[in-house]
Amino acid sequence: MAYEVTIGIPVYNAEKHIRLTMDSVLAQTFQSIEFLVLDDCGTDSSMDIVREYQQTHPRGKDIHIVRQLENGGIGCARNRIVDEAQGVYLYFIDADDTIAPNTIELLYANAQKYDADIVYGSYERIEEFDGTSKKMQFQYPDLKFLEENEFADRVYSQYGFLQANVWNYLLKRDIYLKNGLRFKKVNYWEDFCITINLPIYIHRAVLLSDITYSYYCRYGSLSNFEKRSYIEKEEILKVIDAMGEVKQSYDRVQSKPYFYKWLYKVMMTHYYMVCSIFRNEKIISSAFTNREIRDIMKSPLSFVETCMLGWRIKNLFFYSLGVFPPFFAVALMRIIARLRRLL
Image (cartoon, rainbow, N blue to C red; front, top):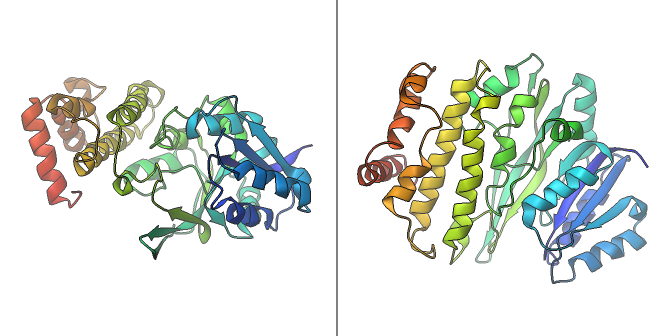
């Protein structure tokens, strides 16, 4: 059966919250939706709950379950959803979050109206720690990008302008398939490898101020190192390797007029990874050496190539962090992090 939209839901040990998620997606006012649930081989009753919905809910026939052969993590789960989805458009939601009833209807209507490759909704972040709940809203201005390179140039011009996650946007599935966009096999910042390059392939985009997604942050979440009591160094190294692959793929964007902005954003994200290591160094299984931290900031370009870019001073600054003596580079990064209140 063909669908206009697939909602992809990776599930791994989410029994405490999966009912809220399923209730919210099944309450969508838009009708042509495939609910594609990826069973990532958890050990709790999450999938029993999903099968219950499949058997009893009026939209149960549209709930499709795909099971991994073994637990592969969130990156592999999302890749499988991309491969198996039957919808023209794809929308991701995490298995402990919720969406507004009109989310898909609203995003789809704008995709059709403007022939957009992608439509973003705004979201709220709900932090639930130590018995308290804190809610913050992250709203986009209502914007439309309808000219070639317009969207990418805007995204790379301002760090943090666009969300760094893959949920809460409706995207033509073919964008993933035709451009070989694949998630990395990591459990933290796996979105970065997709979101940093996604604007390159988007010709028409719409941003909406409507709050359509509720993102919950709780203890134990792999997306919140700061709320964990122990982190394996190997876990972070895998993320750094994945980020490095993105950095070394610069040739796919080097010819674009916004390349210098892309490079700056990539290097800025690497610096934020360094800051994350600084913030969590007491709970990381073994210490990073100054050289390991310095090398995170190595630029893919030479000094001469960097000098020829726009935003020359900004890009040369990051280039310098990757070639300074390790002790000096790390000391400088710590100072900057403190001055910018990142520590």
